[in-house]
Image 1: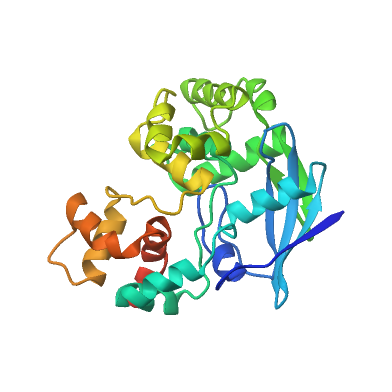
Image 2: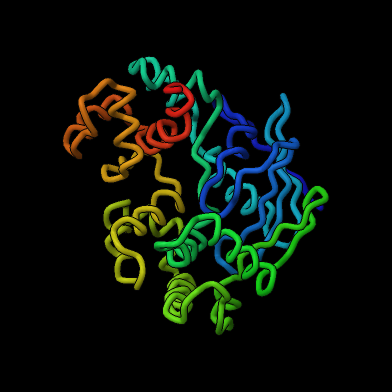
Length: 289
């Protein structure tokens, strides 16, 4: 096994991220270890990583093959450790509501999908289905056709790489149409259309438009894949009902803001609007009890 360490810039709490149920993973009882199993960027192999935090940094123990620096970079991106957290603190100095949220969830950063590929597979699988149900479908798919790692005493399965996914004819709990859409995602990944670097070069809006050519990825899910799969920190979601309701309550508005009203209010959130939106959803219910 190999090891790496990441020294966070600014506040960071691995506990907060581990307790944040999102997309590919369920929130778990915190035992000091965050267990990650994923397709390494490039989508040719899977790796497993045990992640721990102490006073000296965030430490990873890597299971499986692959370039160690590439694994470290992908873990940093998935845990939003590739940004300086002081930028979010600066937003809190300008916006008292954000400051209150930061006190309620100290060190929370947005947990991301492991990659645009994994986000796109999740999006296709989960459309109009309960999240917990699809999490179980994904787990079974990964155990049957991906790769299973033993991470700190627990079995954790990584999603099949695109070539493996193209060989899957049926997925229990998914329609034949959804399986075909998953195959479309796998082909797009093999063509390089779901590479993080490509999305960053295109920019969020162009990347979202391009993804909408894939069946099953409309405006909502293309935004999910781009923003929460590749790590843009300053994209403002304007059509998420939960976010709009929480913003209204936190800022004392008479009702959910319009996209224009939210945009004006969120000017103070730059350059971390994605992060603040996640913070609102995660910490808002804590301070509104």
